[in-house]
Image: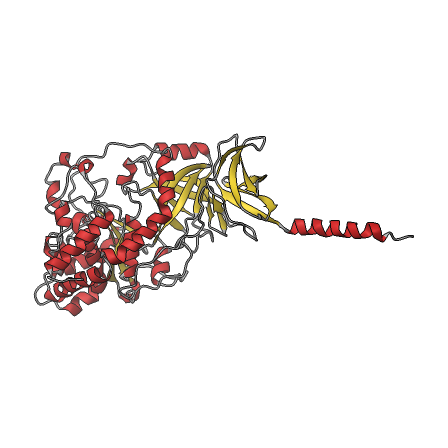
Length: 547
């Protein structure tokens, strides 16, 4: 056999070139939801490469490494470009992240608030990637279209439907089948952009970064989209227990619903994750939620203001919900809450700080009430006897821990006279001298004195324009494009008439402190940064201090 070197050398170069060309292919991935007759492609150095649909909203496929740039495009059946991203992406040398259509940045450099106080000793939070700084993951809820339509059409009903959802991080994808999905919230059910609860299968190992239940907050009351994020970040900064908060993009059966806030649901195993490093054998104590009044209380006989009642059944009228504990349904499950309110009611001038400490995490409560004042929580304990939890900590002989929640009507969105929310005089803040717990608690100098010192300290170290404005600006920069996207999308719910408090009657308005606004439609929000500037200035002026 004669070997022709003249033919072999060109053939060798051809083979090497083909191998090199194959090695230059990488996988491109993008999240988007084109209309049903459209597809998605990646355009690499001017050449279009179609991508394949997977998991409903993820499109991926192989294409060469770009020499100059690449971008994604919506294409028709003939691969003709219908719409393109408005920018060029820089070349990458390996498979892409799970990118999002028309977002030029995958991870943002978001500043953090300082840790001004150490976490309370009771906090033993599990390490988790549920909340990723500077990233906006995507959640896709998918399943039976009839079930989804029923859920969204009955936004005021407490119904669960069984659906599936997929979580898309930058690198990871997690799929959850047969999850329970429900509309979340109370006043938020009257708004066309709905909030949702997601619960993974109870008797399974399904979890999203060690959390089985999450809530997706619509942020429909907040035109800035930053109030809840800022409040929960401040809570973490002062070291008290609460959920953390991050942003996600939400889709439902391949349709975009918009930008949402992701928070942890206050149900097991949340308590183990917060107070026991995620110990799966942790036996939680009772977790009580204050919700103002039960739905079955037409006469508003009792609200969740932590008043003491001799008859334990009064606590079970619906104003308090038991979210965790050994037995959620028995009336006796309210015994720990009754015991605590009895202690508060009977506390006298002979009650010592040690007596309080045995029943209550007073340091945590001081910090929580300081933020409630400084950040203008207008639908919380002092103001509305609402949106808080009390946890009977089994690791500390049942000592109660106060936990704030649901922070959308804050930092300038107020259900009370704005002058009162912005006051520098702590005694004028709505509810402090009105609610049973704060009225009694702050009547003791050994609490009122450190409280005032804490208000001043947090004003100088946290709640002021110098500290908070850069953080707010970095958050706004990250979500600006998603706010515009969110506001352009059709909503799946409906705007419904919000019941007017002026028609309640029966002395109900006497259950709220002076300054309460009865006409919510007339509320004019204060700008977030403007509120912080005015509030910090008022605190400093009241104590004749400067930064």
